[in-house]
Length: 444
Image 1 (cartoon, helix red, strand yellow):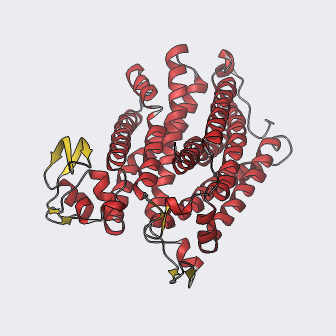
Image 2 (image 1 turned 180 degrees about the vertical axis):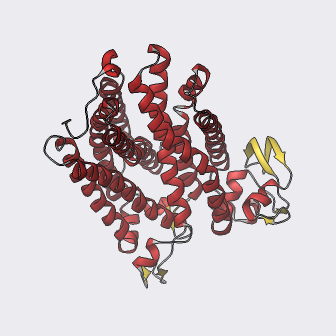
């Protein structure tokens, strides 16, 4: 393994691990606050139990996410020093603001966890709301930095290759930033919502009707289903943005080698870069032109319109994109089925509960596939059109050793998280549903 490949694999492994906790850090505090708000509004002790147990889960996941996020911060400087030296003066602002959001989230989480008996109800609920808001703001600023890497703006490059005329405010909001931010936030809510709902749906199937799991399912899937139904609309906006600003990436996503008007939309298929064609795909005539430009006769540039040395790995990008779209579509179907049941005033039956269980990992798989599309689709550049990944990597060698060490560490942390969260959520006392009704003003 080359040191460049090892550096990419190490950083990619860290991101694949951390993105789960980042998404949970965005969505779970919202679920927690909604459960407490429901308790304070109705006095139902089941929602109090849900809020308390979810709060403990948030604390566990926040701690592990803080560790993996700190590792990524160091890896940015240690693995990609040339990138940081060039990009730091340009996009240092969103990275710094993300740090402030992270510390705000930690402070308000501490108030929330230890303030049940020490603060008033409004202040406690407000602290939880700030945890949820800070998590979303943190993801917002990180996504701005990634959007800049995809469509760099706010600077010029002189003859020596140095950045000049830096405008940090312009760089902070490059073209397409809003689409990417919305897409990432919706992905976080959908993935976490379905993952949490899947746990409670499984326990409902296993133990029968249980007020705790029924209440938790409603909250988690209420948020997750709404996000899953909105995600296709967000994806449409993102696709049209990519068509305008990253046409070579669009061509790789769709396995489009030839430039043509009325380009077809491909479902499935296996791109072959050597033969410059995509085999075994189901082609929908004019579909790509319609989706990318809202014009069935629009011209779509193929990969052959660009130099071969700027092509990403077409097969990997296309397959990851197909996985993301396919799983996202399945989530939307399950979400629609649940919404129909709720509109009819019915609780999900065994069939729908099984579908929710099967769909529970799909959100995170789609989220991971989407980030792979973003990162692989930008290759061979770290900063699109400005700095190649090979020019950004550290000169330090023997990077395979830390890759193995950190992979083992992430496996260990992942197992520990599963064990700890299982204790908090899965082992709910059977008599929790029969807890006495306690008015919120009289409860701790």
